[in-house]
Image (cartoon, rainbow over all chains, first blue to last red):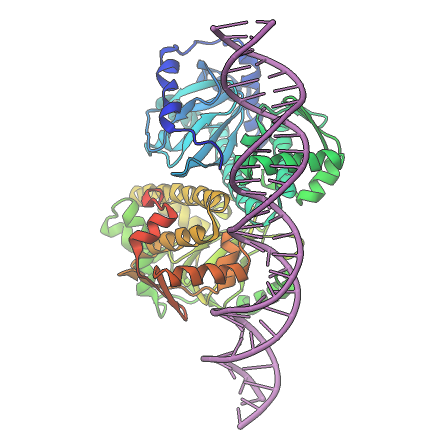
Length: 264
Length: 264
DNA sequence: ACAGCGCAATAACTTGGGTTATGATCATTA
DNA sequence: TAATGATCATAACCCAAGTTATTGCGCTGT
């Protein structure tokens, strides 16, 4: 049994972060983010120069957030949405026992709570997995954007379909793959996604997640996650030290995972 | 290892069904379907009388389809979408080994390939799991419908969010629940979904699936699926004979699965 | 009436992965 | 500098679930 993290404990951090004001641009690492969201959407449907500047304007308000901070609680609705600006966050569900399942990793450029923009409460919680910078998007600004920028609206549509496809891929991953295969598939996916926002190159990227964070996404125990990573290392597929991952044999890794990038 | 079902074998049935013409309404069991789709959408957002008749008009063309027939192949795009009219179908992905994972059950009123309506190819295959009646919806008719019937457009939005939430629930189900718990959760979900289209009452519904079909949705082997069902029977939670399921202790079943219906 | 088939049931055996526990390393903070 | 807490690594043990195989029932087609 993994240690039980009481929800109360986690929520206690919220007031702290709520006291921190939203920064106006330019944020310290703003250039990188403009890049992340714009690059992501651009890959789905080419954006115009106006589209790009509109995206930059969309994310004026950002805020630094520590690790393991609840961004959105389950069943909570809001008049704004959040976009990951920098760092890793994740959707998750928790059982009464305290055990949790990560449903999706949110990386820079990812929209946290689409439902909020349509006025629906969320069926899961969203929490930062590393130190993050989060952008706040008022519903009005979002609606205005998709109204006046068909190119962005189109790209957002595709992004949503890709998100849905990723969810299906995760079901298959947990359902019919072994531990090593699951891990291999996840790493292939992350390489692809991080690559598309310019945060991976040459098979290398920063992975600010603990083995427990990976285990919770793959439906494994953290002990077995460790075993699985040892196997991938031993077989010369990856090199993972500290928070930096190098994929040494991308072809073999994809083969092992039967990874098909087309869903992204 | 489950027996490998070559894809070729399955596809051989397609030409057969393609020779069968699309029937014009009224289809033999049409009243039931109008009921299924309309009831489903009505639960998400109240429909007007005009909305209802528009829905009936939408599904003029239907076709009976046998069991284990591929409705949509992976990577295939089309100018029309399919809606399940009667029976059970399912989305699935298959590995090279032949093992497959069912990603979602499609019951009457469910849209098979939303992507097709937006012009995107599918990342998985769709196959009937029982004898079905399928409705064909041309893209133009669909677009026209959501254009002129805001109530339906709204309900379809919500239906899509519910589908996404169901996908997330399945990830959690496979990831952090034991075999019995997974089965319990799935049965609770089916009771809820079938109930909302008037095909379950008093904890009873027809379940035209084999134990292997259930196993493939839950990431279990068919042998273990059998064990799990025996356990649920022995504990007096369910009675499953032939293709008819009775949930004898709904409260205990929900408790066991930690089932929360709010995501639907 | 019989053969053939799909499906459920169940036994026997194996294994992947969970659980618990213990050190080692490293960063933080007192 | 020492104490504390995370994280990674590994060993030992165990069980839930996979695998393989056999039986029996109830269809369906001939």
